[in-house]
Amino acid sequence: MSERLNQLLLGKDLDALLFFSPENLRYLTGFSGGEGVVCFRPQGISLLVDFRYFEEARLEAGQCEIHLLRQGMKGLREYLKERRFRRVGLEARAITLSGFQEILQEGIEFIPLTHELDPLRAVKTPEEVRKIQEAVRIAERAFEEVLEDVRAGLREIDLALELEYRMRAMGSEGVAFEAIVLSGPRTALPHGRPSGRPIGEGEVVLFDFGARVGGYCSDKTRTAFLGKADPELRRVYEVVLEAHDRALEAVRAGVSFREVDRAARQVIEDAGYGEFFGHSTGHGVGLAVHEFPSLSPDSEGILEEGMVITIEPGIYLPQKGGVRIEDLVLVKDNGCEVLTKRDCELKIL
Ligand code: ZN
Ligand code: ZN
Image 1: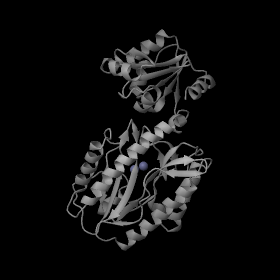
Image 2: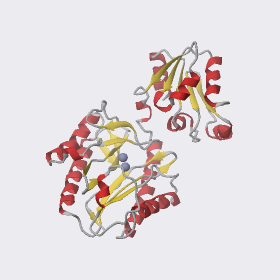
Image 3: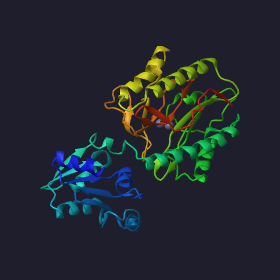
Image 4: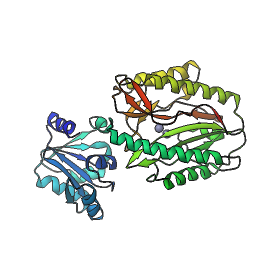
């Protein structure tokens, strides 16, 4: 990782790189406090935090130089000035415009970096994969328990809370993201939030959830039917499952992001539902639940061994209902390892 960053410094003639996102702070230093700045230089990594996080930073990021940041971005401005930097690269997606204005100064040229930093965390080490697997295990156990409780009359929010509670009780650090539980026509909202709507007999129910271990997320979606499945949604389910399986078969190191997306999208288009699949086929998962790469029709890039990505095609019919099936996979040289259980056959609860 240092090697990659050193090359970036050299290639862009930079004296230092500044990182602001909680994920990169944790990735580069081990610090989990979430707030602060990492200054990367060939000589070493410095972590700048304010008083609230100083002790925590010393405990978690002992191998870095820890610098007490006074007055927030003003303090960072002084820090940069004292070190006489000329050109500094910024994690542009993670600094606010007002923060940027506060560090601006004569004599330093700031270079915003976006896609240059994307691949940084994409390939996981075995240790990172182990944490993701543990998050998967917790989330799946919690889900299996909750699934047994699903019955007509329970509200979406009841099931979402139950799922989150069980994940936390089983050792998840918070949740990877707010659990999504949707029912009936609300399943047509790809990222809807659980509401007070009671689930009715014969309805479709969609669960999208993830746990977090050592900072690392899991992400999985299952769609089930309560009592019986509506004939059209049953057909939609079969199409989504077919798209999901074709995409999984396409995953292998060396294949482009687009090809994997195409494998899923083709099935859905051929079935006449193309316009109802408006999101990407998958995304990277790690310290952030959504990270590089994105598997979409306009993505640039190629899968590498060790990437952890989701495969999650979906079809959403407005006012009727939606189906999404999402699994988490580890990219291998000769294919992939599905990290989630492949329990994706149509389920009647
Ligand atoms: Zn998801
Ligand atoms: Zn996802």
